[in-house]
Length: 442
Image (cartoon, rainbow, N blue to C red; front, side):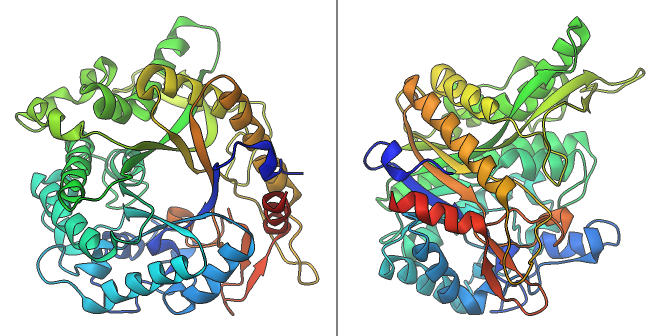
């Protein structure tokens, strides 16, 4: 059983989330190519050779999907805009059809009593900008400010909140260091520059949106609860490096105007000239801070000889999701307390993503995903404990509404409250959807 709405303070917001490329169908509506189109077209990058060309066809079925959000009783719908859909070349003229789509989508949310929570960038870089170096190129951050202004002018009068960039760690580290996401690089210089320029782009977007008189602006970062794999000093040092890269790099830039020394030890020679001068813009004041949390990670030193950062993930004893991620709600509680204590203070915090992948199948037209219900229940209880400890948590968003294109995992990893048959595109609410509906009525 999920804790009922009445177990949370009045005004606590419950939502669910999606992202543009994962559900819309990027072949529809006249967008330019995205670097995820390029990445997915390279054999071996995406499981099953999948791509986002059709996805869930949300571009045409958005009204049905918003009915599902409203039907469950959610207060808030977190969605993203596709930069390549709105500006096919990454700059210059906008695609009127793309902006019109998001206009209809936001109007549809408002008509259903949903608060539109907009994320400007959920990893969809226009291929035209990728060809010019993408986030390695400082100019991309400047063009992102132009994109933010175009979206803000069109949608800003109706959206509830705006975050410029979702999970900059994934866009930079997974995409440029580990090569697991677009653009698929394994290049430390590219990584250092992408990490910095994503933060610069965030600051430019906040500046542009504030210039339009818009408020309720935030940032969204992903975090893992990091644990040493054993009690050795070497494991503790390795865990501290991973924590600095994964958890501290972006939040320290946003709230303290610095990068952790453990990260600078590896990337300082590769950062762009004059990077320190960008912190005033990166530190633009925020109205809230969003936390995406899924799992903990146990870290061991990498076998010698090992290049920086010199660590590796180790298996742990907790129950695991379909992707092998440990289920660790205690980690969410610890992170909320830590972030509020060390960085954000009284600033409202939001859980902007939380969920699990499971091998969901339909049996007699139903999907009984009891493990997902237990996952959300445990993490909501972790939120309650953190709030009792004084954390100013203002909302919880379940990832995700629809089974979708799960990036490098293709269509095999299902995180969502609604089952999608990727042949017929039939939507079938799972037991977890019904559990949220009951909880939000209580």
